[in-house]
Image 1 (cartoon, rainbow, N blue to C red):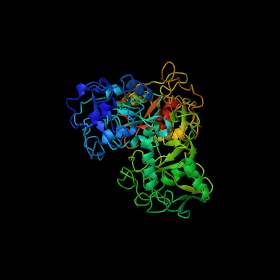
Image 2: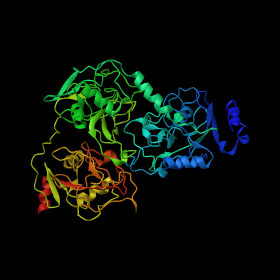
Image 3: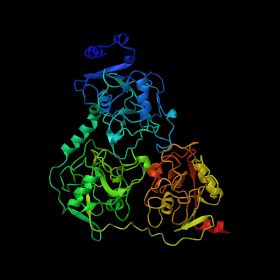
Image 4: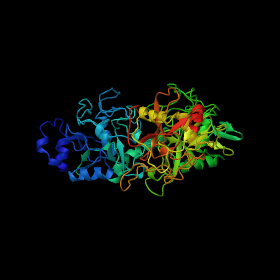
Length: 588
C-alpha cells in the first residue's frame, strides 16, 4: 500500500488512476506534501458519505466520525492535513477557492430563522455535496468551506478533536481554511455530544498518524503567538482609575503602547505575573465596568458600533494602542479586540468542560479575529471562558490593583401596584410566570412574534420591551442570572446540551423554585425563550433568556437571539408586561 501511495503521489495526472487503486482510495483525492510525515495523504473529495449529489451526514460526534472512517478502511484527517488540503498546493489560499472571499461560492452565511445556533434544523439547511461546483480546492476537494463543520483529529484543549471550515450558517469571515474560528476560546464543542452542524470527511495514509503528527497544528499556533509577543518588561505604572482606589492597566500586558501584547499564557501564568507586580487579575464585572463605563455601553466608545474603531475583524493581532478610537470612558485601550483577556472570575459549567477536574475562568473583550457581535464590553452570546491551565494563541490579559469594585446597583425606583399574578417594577408590571402565567402549568410554546403579541393583548397586557425584561431578570443587584452571579446548571430548566431520558421539553411554570429573581419572577432563564419588543421598534421582536436546550450565554439575563418575526418553535414562548394604565384596569 505504501508503494502505491508513493507512486500515485508522484504522478501529476491521476485521471485514469482511480480504477487501479485499492477500493478504500476510490473517490478520494491524493495530496502531495513534502512536509507531511509520510510524503502526502489521500482525502475524500466530498463530506461523508463522500457521494456527490447526496446530503452529507450531520449531527455527528467525534467518535462517530472516527468509527465511520475506520469502517471504510480509512481514518479521520488530522487538523494539519485538513488545512493543507483546504489551502491548496500554493499554501496561500485563505479560502479553498482562492485568497479572497467571494459571495455565494460556498454554502454559508445562511441566516438562522431562530437567530441562534442552539435552535436549528440541519436537514432544512444543508446543500447536496458538490452542488456549489466552484466551492472546491485547487486540487479538487469540495465543500471544505461551509455546509458542515468537519471533525478532525486534534489535541486542541485536550479534547482529541476539533472542527474545521464552518457550517452553512457561519459568518463568512469565520469560515476559512485557517481554523482560527474554532480555536477561539469562546468556541464550544463537546466531542462526546452530537454537534448538529458537524460532519466529517476521511483521510488515508499507509501508516496511522502518531500523537506528534496530531499535535503539529497546536504547537505551531502556540509558537507563532509566542514569537509575535513583545519581549519587553512589564510597565506597572501605566494604569487608569476605574473606582475609588481601584486601577486597571491602560494596555494589555506588558502594558506598553506600540508593543504586541503577550498571548499563549494560561490563566495561572497570567495571575502569577500580575501577583509578581503587586497586582491581580480583574474580576469579570470590574473588567466590564472599566470597558463600558457607568452608562454600560456595548462598546468602549458608545452604544452603536463604529467601523474600524477597535482592532476587530482583522487578519492578525496588532500593537497596543494603535486604534485611538478604541478607548474606554476612563482611558483604557483595546478592551475590545486585539486579544481576549483572562479575568479572575470562575465559571462552574459542566457542559463547557472536557473533564471534571478542569477549572474554567471567564474571558472578555474578543480578539482581533472576532466581529462586532463578539467584540463587546458586555457579552450576550456565546461562552467566553476557558480552562485555567490551557493557553490560547489569542488570549492575553491586563492587571488590576486595589480593592475589588462592588457590583453596580441599579436604581429601579418604586414599583407600581400590580395584579396578584404580576410583579411591580419601576413603571411597569411583569408576569410572574411565562404565558399563560399560571403556576404548575406548562407554558405556551411554539409562538411567533405576532401570536405572542396577540396573546398578551387579549389579556389586556403587552409584550415586555427587552429593556424591561432584562431589568426584571437582573434586579437591583444587576445579577447575571435571575438567581445570582454564579451559574448553576441545576437551578433552572436548562439541559445545557446534556442528554436526558425521554428527551427535552418544558417543565411546568415554577417547577424550579430556585430559578427566581429577588422580586419573585420565575423561569427567566431556561424553560422557554421569551419574545420581547425592541427598544427602537415595538412592532419588532427579539427573544430573550434561553430555552430548555443549550442556550445563549448559558441563559444569563443578557442572552438574546434576533429571530425572524415569523419564527416559532417548541422552545419559544412569551411573558407579558403591563404599563400603569393597563395595570389599573387589570386590578379592577
